[in-house]
Picture 1 (cartoon, rainbow, N blue to C red):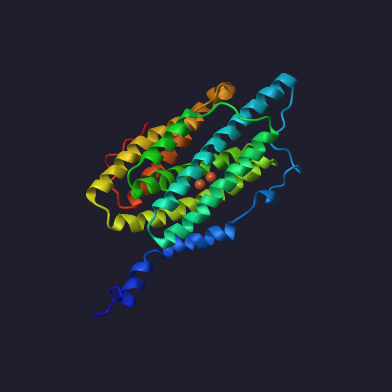
Picture 2 (cartoon, rainbow, N blue to C red):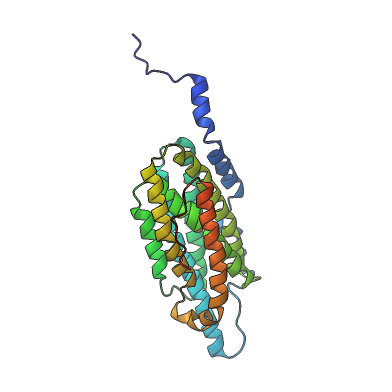
Length: 273
Ligand SMILES: [Fe+2]
Ligand SMILES: [Fe+2]
């Protein structure tokens, strides 16, 4: 009798691995898109939009932008922990390889935000919803749910936010970073969709039902996060709220469509509007 472990027939092994081709494609894309913090034109263009008017007015504008940067920094510090959890939890070599790049991305995002916030006067008020979204992820029981909360939802829903910030901060470091992060999170989201599809092939009804529950917990938290205004932004927040709500509704609907495209029964998902 041979002491060798029973070998999986070659063609069968190839067939199983081919399921992960989508995930591997995102690994290659991530390597191709990789950038470093020194690629950002630090010191060559303004950090954030420069205010006009009285000194007081300028200081107020600066606080608004600091609160924007603070929110992103807070989210990316949490994203480091999440990406590291995914790297540890994913059993498949292709997914592990991919997550090793995501850990680097989130860490690089954090480095860039830390550098930017240092240049514009330091941190500010924390967004309590970001912490809550983070805990939802960190406490999720299954890998399927973690991928769902972070990559399928959060990283997709955050992209229009980056585009929005970029549009209102043309010609600044802040715009440059938002554009880079929108591309990176597009890859994070795409990889998550590809991996979640494979994971759900063998998932039980219970796991699927848990994902729908997670969507119901996540969407209102995300809505609260998107509409949250720190003290510094209360004044302008007021003016933008109607438009923000409209935009948010479109984004949340998109989130539900994504869940449906993964084959989940989303008829039970309730939108917070
Ligand atoms: Fe990030
Ligand atoms: Fe990300």
